[in-house]
Image (cartoon, rainbow, N blue to C red):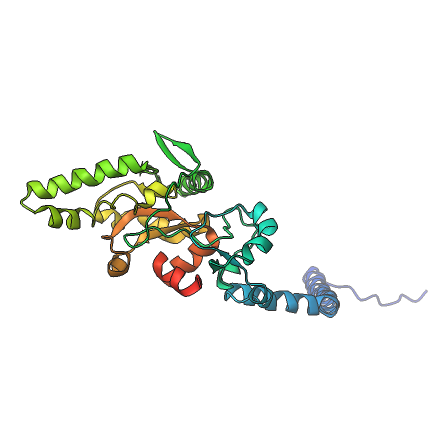
Length: 302
């Protein structure tokens, strides 16, 4: 019987052929995956593309502080009125817009949505050496601990900000907050007495004292919206607390009220420790543009 010649492979040839087959399968699998991903991606863009584009366009307008709908529906709000809660703002907007003395909420301020917990519909109440606190003004204040008090919404915002800073490893604490008009008067008179003891006459002493302690009736501390934090030294600006506040205070509706380069406008000496609650929509514009409250109200307050 005739024997057939059967080709036999060496072990080396078998291993080589297996490797070739393995790499061929890998290449084939990669091509299949690429085709599958490409097909799914094309289907997604075909179905979702218009909506995504529209959403990005809308977001771009909001980030730049321009909203066509908010510009057309720009409301007028009472001059030197207290901030309202976002829940009340919608119900009161129609009545407020008919007021004869009013301040509009800028369309730029609408870059923060009214669902933001620190949003304030009204423009901030201005109190400074040229704008006295309204007669009979008495804020509703609550305790924030350590014997200090703030207006209700400002207190909630402060506690959230303090907790957020702590999460970032930064400790914030209050060293002054709400003061009654009587207490502000005492502090002012004490400062006047200090300058008189240094040889200033009464008029000069009052002028110098007013640079450091607000004249009664012109202090933000009496509003319940202002607080001093951590230190009363100028070098507070070099601290981790100050740096954190510069980056994050506006997120919670607070501003650095008396910046170093705005003394001629605020008429108050630089106070890196003094922060004022105005609402996140107003605060983000003020802090991002590097302006003070007086400039903001002049520019956006109507």
